[in-house]
Image (cartoon, rainbow over all chains, first blue to last red; front, side, top):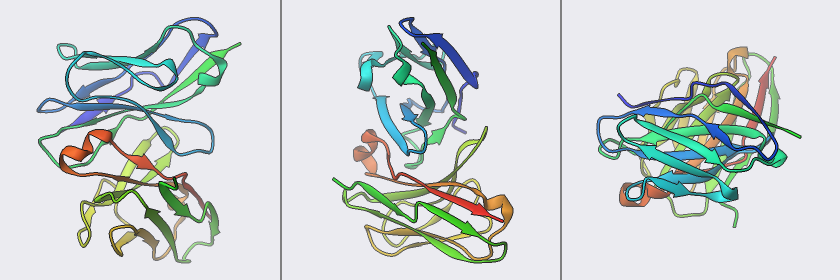
Length: 114
Length: 115
C-alpha cells in the first residue's frame, strides 16, 4: 500500500537560514510526489511536483525538492527562509499504476523566526 | 479563475441535524474528492468520484454520503451530524489518467462545528 511519512510535526528555522522539511514515501511503483502548502484559514496550494526526470525540482516561492529513489525521500528545501514561509506543509504521493488518489502526510508546521 | 468553489465557508450544527456541503469546479476535471482535516491527522479522504456517475468510499466514509450531480458538482451530505464530525472539509478536483500529473486543485474549505 502507498504511504507517506513526515517525521517532524514542527520545524523552527531562523529567518535567512536554509530550511528542510522531510518526507519519505512508500509505493510499489515509480511515484508521483507533491508538496502542498497551507496558510492559516486557507485551502492547500500546490508548490511543486516530481513525476520523472531531473531529481531536483523547483517550485513556487523559491522552494525546491530533491527526489532520492534509494532513500525513498522527497525533502522540501529552501536556501534562505522568509517569515512569510511560516505555514503548514504537506507531502503527498500517488502510485501512478493505481487509481487517481493522492495520499497525504500528516503535515509539518514550519515556523520561521524573525 | 474560480477553480474549486465550496459553500458554505462556516457552519454550526446541532447534534442530529443534517446538511449538505456543496462543491463545484470549472476546470473540466474528471475526478473530485472530499477530505477532512483534523489537527495531527493530516488530510483523510472521505469519498471520491473518479468520473461523472461514479463514487467510491475513501478512508473515513462513515456518517457521510455523496452525490456527483454532474461533471462540475460533487456534494457531501451529513445525514445526522455528530460532534466527531467537527472538522475542516476540503473539496478537490483533478484530471485523470495522464492529466493527473498536475495534481489536485483545492477549494478554500468549510469549517464545520457540531455542538
